[in-house]
Image 1 (spheres, rainbow, N blue to C red):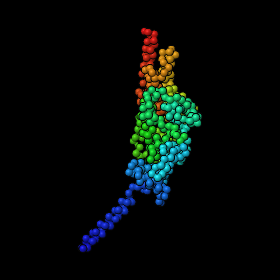
Image 2 (cartoon, rainbow, N blue to C red; image 1 turned 30 degrees about the horizontal axis):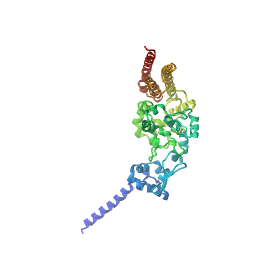
Image 3 (cartoon, one colour; image 1 turned 90 degrees about the horizontal axis):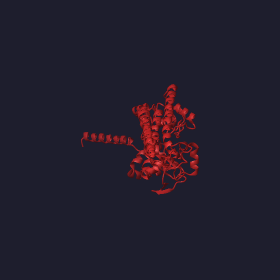
Image 4 (cartoon, rainbow, N blue to C red; image 1 turned 120 degrees about the vertical axis):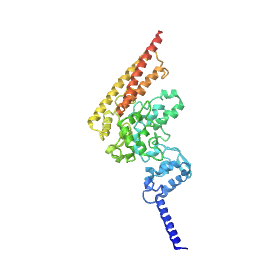
Length: 420
């Protein structure tokens, strides 16, 4: 064989071997730290291989997306196995699954095994029991759960089921109301809620929980248009411009304005930005009951307002912050007065016996409900979140229109009763 042919074969063979090593080194896999692999150093433990390797062996064929999401997660990077999350905890029923005993259903109790502080903070929030009770009332909670929640939210858990939801019917409740309100669902194991409502399941992502669109799964629409208001606000405009330059995956306890120079919902309501306290109680920094028909100050008004202003101070000076709050509080006060005028119209008809005691069986009741539940809330949230159009056209204009309609309808009801 000619020398050139031999030499060429050796060179080509060597190149193929080198290429194979290079490709293998760059091959994505569960052990590659660059994609959030499970093992940052050394070899995986035997238990990890049994739990995660065995699970992935089947699930790569059946539900490949969840394996891929898990491999990108912080859980995988820290060596948390599938079984660590899927094993049954106290109060849960076990089920046999491919040689393992796992929980029949995962709940917040499984996350609580490692994230106890976050769970306890969440229990004090309106995302917990009050969210479920807003639709279903207190019937699904234990006496102990009701007593605990009523300490923080008096009257919001020990209450009847939602009258409007009952009139709309079970299918509307199941595929409508509960899709959001099950963030506070009582579970059979004694826990409340599901952390995956905000963090998702196998990705278990803090990045996802920080995105306004995640909150917007529920906090949107005519009765609580927070997502729409946010995107209209300067905060939202800046976020949409700069979000690709932000480190949304930063450790919550190490988060700085360098990571997130523009606030999202989580920044203002939960984050530990530049040394602030991290919390999963989304009500801690709130000062008014903005969702109510008449928005009074919350019991911890002073503390809530002071803590929220601390967040504002990470970007703004004290004077514009105080001006912003003063103007927003004036909108709340004015809106309260407009709702009171409307409420007096309805109460006057009731006092005269011109309305039935049943809820939502007469058109005028829906007009009043729209007035405060849609437009009153919108004006107040718009004022506190920087959404001028929602204060004005989606808020105050509609308040004026609906009040005019209420007055006219009340006149017609009285005239009909008097036979005129």
